[in-house]
Length: 496
Image 1 (cartoon, one colour):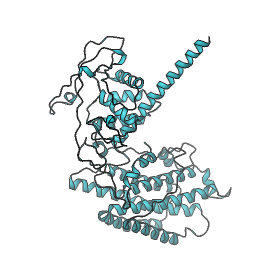
Image 2 (cartoon, one colour):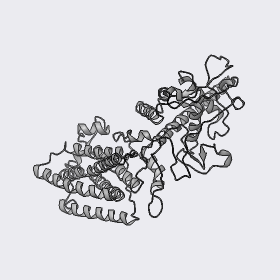
Image 3 (cartoon, one colour):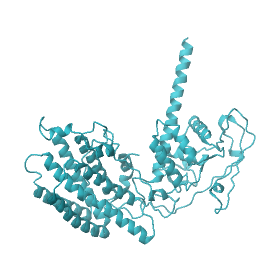
Image 4 (cartoon, one colour):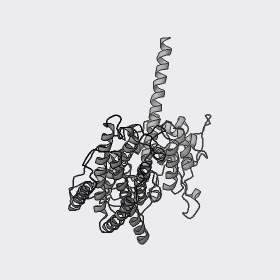
């Protein structure tokens, strides 16, 4: 899921009401319990039971299968946690099949698509036990190479394994989760549903009390995937946004940022004279040495709090570490274009000492204020890089600044942002601006959220929901294409 789509999905939940009080209740105290908004209670997964009377819808019109679920002691090995599915009277039609108990409450999957999915699952179910494990999921996603990259297959397989604790998932539940994902009745909460649409006891008012795959949030504690280096041209077109201050904390954060901006501009003469590469690099290098501090401070404080309280962090720690490293990569790129002198380096040491100490104390007192402060700082950073990009693009041909339109980007930048062998300094500036825009949106989004909130930008449940929806859409497209091909063939035959 892209950042834009994720923030669109979360933004209204994170920053609602006039006081900007978050509505998320993403408790991380249970691996499998999952109610995003305050619900009356959290329940554990409820097992489905099917008997022979409701097991008459079978791929390929095979005879009915009788399902018997064996429940084993929790202390047994992981294989004993799987339900064993016993079948009989299966007619051999050249391939085995997975039975599909009648599921009248499927909302989006048509019988044709459902049967295509069951056939797909049957092909990857290596041990033919009606359970899909991580290795079989890897095979399944690899079959749809047009929809999933190799990196996504590896990430999603690992995420599935970690989120389910190494267990497999029954085909029935997998199908149920696919239907929920494609119906856009997200397992993280959705619109109202009529009584006959509810899949009791899993669904209540459009929200799953427990994810249908039984996955939880454990993986968010150690997995975080964000590759800054693969921006599309559309993602590099950044919109200038501003979050109006609402609370006293918001107004105080904005006032502090405006004071810092005014003082720094005056001290460096940023608005005086023409813009030159020297002026741009001096400003960028100095600011990036400071910009990498907030993310690291936030991560360290959250790390110690997690250790001290013996509780989970929800994955925020990983996100802030990645943010700090991203800012450091900006610095390592710019110093390839200019090597600062001793006076400059001394100023950096002083600024780091003062800012790190002040920000650390402020974060202990009010993380909400600090994230709002960083959000406004990043708004100013996006403005600055937008001004720099415009100056480069409009620079008079032959000028020193105009050369950046063709000047090769440093090697480290080409590798980090995947700029290609012809990447230029102008491309670097656009990539850096996109990074700053992301930091802007992230810090505004997390300002004021509860401490135990699961990382809204990398929630394992929503990442897997996205995978499920993409897989079903690919199946649907294939079915439509096959139907169109058959129709075209039939028309051609009739014409002959």
